[in-house]
Image (cartoon, rainbow, N blue to C red; front, side, top):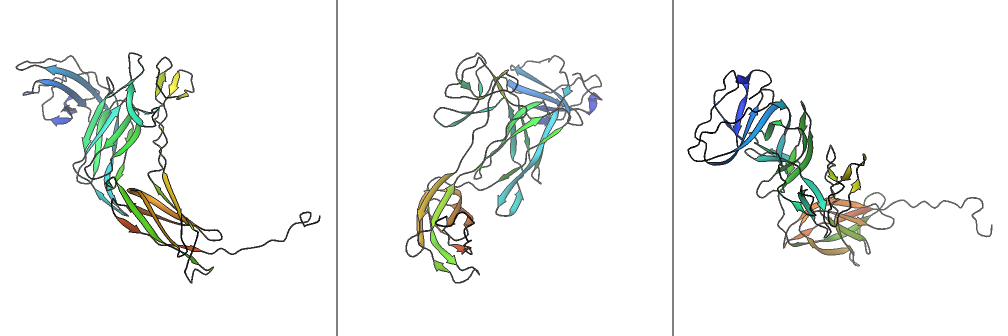
Length: 337
């Protein structure tokens, strides 16, 4: 391999796992006992900001001699993976974090989000995994930290999947000599289904006292995630000649093609009015939600909650009465004027 600095200080990874092999001063090394099949070989500089990659196929009993692996300026991806439980964060150890390049978000004609890559042959569809895409991975340590060294510059979708938790994903842009940060706070996944939210809305006086059930208060439960994936930097540009069915991306600033933007992900909102006793009840999809209550002349109440499948969650809300100020009409607006 052609190195930046002392070749003997470099590390070697085979299929993402570091292998302990001596490296000669000329950059040569030998890895014995490689199983037959396709493999990815990475060489990583001591600073994590230089590296090279080679992909190869080896047959049973074959001694494979690879051509020199050029080492180029790279960046790295680092961060932490934590489990969030309310206000408590707990590090997650031994979790694999994967970064993949050449991924784009497409809002298809049926309204669903597709992650893929444009067909390099100029066809109309998307292919996944993307051809010639680069993939890197790392495992978190006991503190929940991870580092992916020697990542080639470009845009990446970084993902982490832990059973029982909501998967995490982020777009990052890797530049030579810099570290792109992707931190994750994963919450417990909610089993799909339908749950019930019920309770009573009370009105308080201007001092916040004397709760009285409010009839006709508007109660709304918003289920979902009000989140838009960040715009990839640099932007992902699709050549003008590539046709994407059901997709109308915005034209790129430099006119070179069409820029694919991540779709907006919105809340689902369910509404009802309280009865004469101030009571309400709503059947809504299970998941993380926000509930609000509004009534004319009162402050709005808001609360976050988790709605579990086949479970009734009780949430009582209290609204404080607002002082009503009646201002005299200004000159020229009095009746008869």
